[in-house]
Image (cartoon, rainbow, N blue to C red):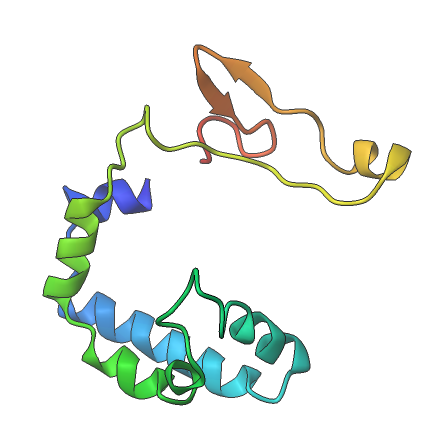
Length: 124
C-alpha cells in the first residue's frame, strides 16, 4: 500500500525524503560496529552478478544517501509495477519440524492473491 500511495495519490516530498534519509544514515552509522551488519553489507561484493557493489558504496553510504532526490524516487516508483496483481505478500519461516509449523499459521490463497492471516488482508 505504501509503494502504491507513493507512486500515485501521495508522492514523496522533500520532507519525506529528508526524514527517511536521516533514519537510514543514522542506522547505518550505528550498525557499523556490528559484525552481522558488515557481513550483510559485504554480501555480493566481488560477485560478477553484482558488479557495482564495492566497499566504496559502504564507505560512502551517507554521501550517496545525500545525493538521492525526490525526482530519483519518482522515477523508480514509476518504473515499479505496484498493481495488486503484481505484488505478493509472503510470510517466511525458518527451522525444521514441529517448531517451525507452530511458529506461523499457513497462508490461505484466495482468488489468486495471498492473504496474510496475521495481518488481515493483503499485507495490511
